[in-house]
Length: 251
Image (cartoon, rainbow, N blue to C red; front, top):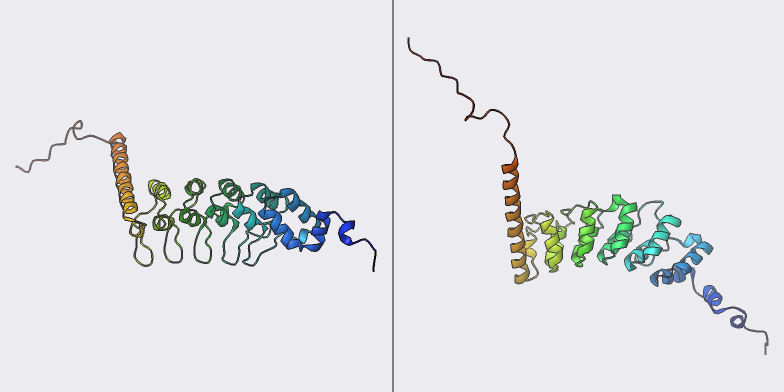
């Protein structure tokens, strides 16, 4: 019988794990757990594993963004230059921004948009934008943040649905209010001819939607009236300028 000490006794547990477990699995696990130090160590030793796409094409940045691990997102983008060859997309065409927006991770959304503003209104293979992901999942703070950062509210997916269609269909009242109050087109039909109002999740949501539109229209009408009243009329006034007498046609 061989009395040589086993490999397990010669190596610390974490070193044994690194030998026995594939690099891609270890890196993905570190990112999922939000373990920045471990992720840094793995990437230092295995820099070629940076992107490490999973079965659906999610890269390291996709996973960190979806989980909301801001520190790892910042490290991947700033130190590892994860997006140096262009903004990542998975097999569905989703960017890391889309996944972060759909999960409501405000800080990650702001971090990504501040560095890659060009992708704020990008659409995946179904035409879904980051704002649509946020609207569908009721992430009101992210919807408002994206609007503040310059996102377009009325971009449409392949079926002609806007972010307001998504918010209405899933019954997210706060998101509906935000989009309506910030000027989204409530009358825009999709390719089936349905407006966001007609996609209302319930009768109660539909009535809420109607009230929001009425309140917005009244506010806009009032603002326009005040603006017209405050605008000075330039030029001569008929009350102060004497009218020239019309020439007589008599002999």
